[in-house]
Length: 571
Image 1 (cartoon, rainbow, N blue to C red):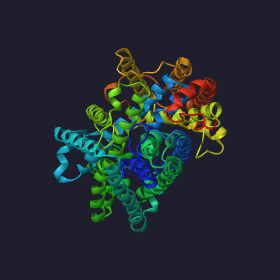
Image 2 (spheres, helix red, strand yellow; image 1 turned 135 degrees about the vertical axis):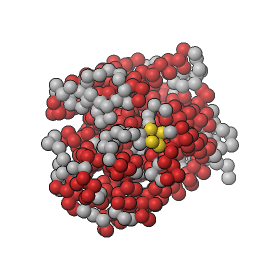
Image 3 (cartoon, rainbow, N blue to C red; image 1 turned 120 degrees about the vertical axis):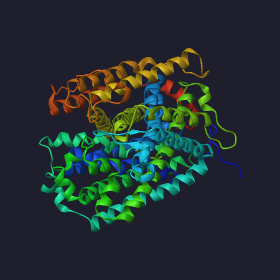
Image 4 (cartoon, rainbow, N blue to C red; image 1 turned 60 degrees about the vertical axis):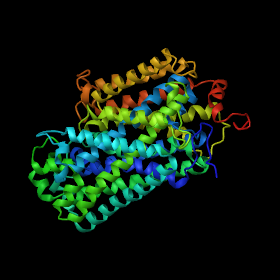
């Protein structure tokens, strides 16, 4: 039987399980290996509240994406929803943010593989820990990283059906191993004293609320990201109207439960003697030169298991440190390719990005370029922790467009068929946008300025594509969204400059932009003032954007690729 193709030439071969595992394999990646330690160093046992708070925000955003994904089952959906609702400038802006986060996750996962594997004697030369702070890849480590990216490309090029089979097998392993670690560590090696005086107290800082909030961009939110992968692959789903919403929602529930339990297990299983010698949880960060702490930061769960004397579990976790991040990196290479495909379909990138292999029905050029972009990010960002905050901010910026798009489409096109319609959208949509803005703010001033530079670079690339007429289907630019998008970025930067999260957020600046603009986050607003100002500004932008949505006739033009007839639109 000939494969079922969508209108864009891609094969529709993914069922519910394929969509669910596509999201789940992206959620459970390197985050479970490193996120628990990063959060514990910042907030101690109170980090559990960080996971719960982040899970609530992510769940709301996932519900919003579930409705939009069913409404517009197209490849690279997150880059196209704002385009349909607000026009080409908004589509280019949030589409670039989507691509930026997807293209940078693969190198993060590759870094995680090498960093964890370096705890083995045969791979020590791949990653060199610094005396103080994060380490860096060696020449051999860079070569291994590039080989992994090439493997991701190969598996993506063989087609979506084969990719689904590989991803499904990997994801079953990825869910099972954290659950196994939770059971073994909680039942046999749990130290209740670690939640109290043994680790410096349940609340290790006097600024309890701020320490919990700071855990979100330091690895927690990054760990929970990935539910949107089912949305990105909607154009390759057999029955997206039936399966998409369920896949997104179930993936978030599974991920949130696993991560919260992982954090509890990690806190309880930590060696009490190591905690005592380093004066509690705050002494276990990458700035500590103690050999045991250096080893802990290279491979947190491996080291915890080794100190507990569970050699067989440590070995399995070292294997999982390759499988879990590699599975996530593989899926994000897929996602990045679909996003650039979507950006090209919308006319913002050269038409070559839409090239689909006639045999495997995959966008081969977009896949190759996604790997090249990922390889470029390996050079300036030496370790997992160095890149997480920027990728988190880009991801949440991408998510922030969804609540706006949802309510704009509810008002402009209420009659469109919605296989899943989120209840309470009038309340949850603005709350979701506020939550997204909070997470971006928590990343800190230098992270925001780094993200701003990256966004300006995206505008430049899109302008060059227009200037050289690289895509004959480049749309006319809808400038109506320029005022509120510009105001949004400027307002967030101003609040961050005078706010309580900076100057460098968690990591003190990123890569080549480490010294871009200094002096922000000077605490003039205090914590309460920063949260209040961000909330008010988010609501201003939310209602401004919805009121500046495209008129119905323009939306009809843009969504004609999905709803080509009035009957299809529900008229």
